[in-house]
Image (cartoon, rainbow, N blue to C red):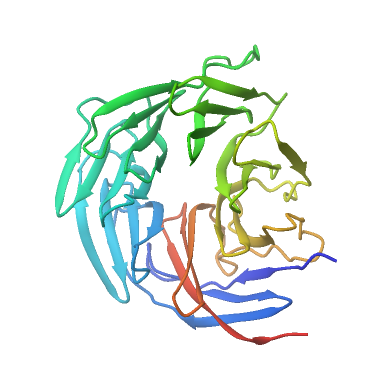
Length: 346
């Protein structure tokens, strides 16, 4: 039998953009309990849009609707940088220093490094939906159907055109890229119509195209092992494929109970999914088995009159083995908790 995982959110109705706590995270061979949680107010008019943990794993970076990047550590909120422009929709670390790159809804791309902010000279063709960074700090940023490769100083180097699908309906937007991931000399793209593309990074050639009839938007492409990726669709559809080629793929049972997925992340051997109803649940990466049969999908803010979608999600394993989870919600809350391994369960 596959192992089952359960996490139920417990409300802590505080000021907007406060930090809430997660309740017990359970899975059969290990028990994790809440280690600590913080309530931090980060200011009015700042809807959290995207979130990542810092490289030190001691704090969290949040991109907001007001064009700010904010650092949250313990009870302290530190504004790092403000563009005073459009909402920030994507945020990633650079590989070779403590800098990070982010993109906004106006199509601008920014790099913040050594307390210095630089921006791209031209706007991308649409708001920056996703960003990936390779080991040489080359940056891949999405604008509509185009993925543009930049160097670490935001000089444009190459474009990868995902191209429109052959579907007749909504052909004007069904080619938009919504998720990307990198592996060696390959770029993998997930599209709004549920199809996927594979590019050769050296030549820019599209080496494989996988179309789906009436497919659901791809919200993430996760690397779940040294040899496998996992594409996640908004309707809960999962497809794993080899890191060397999309052609070596396998479809898996949907993890959806008709509730749209809105965010996903992975840590250690877990995939965590956030939904449009504000619930959070887990499956294991090695089995990719739906756990909807046994899980209760209570709202993440279960005591509020209405629940808000989880808009972004991140997780990390700390040096002591504990897991930290952080989520932003569409009603303006940032939620974070640390799970501590307690004991073995038989």
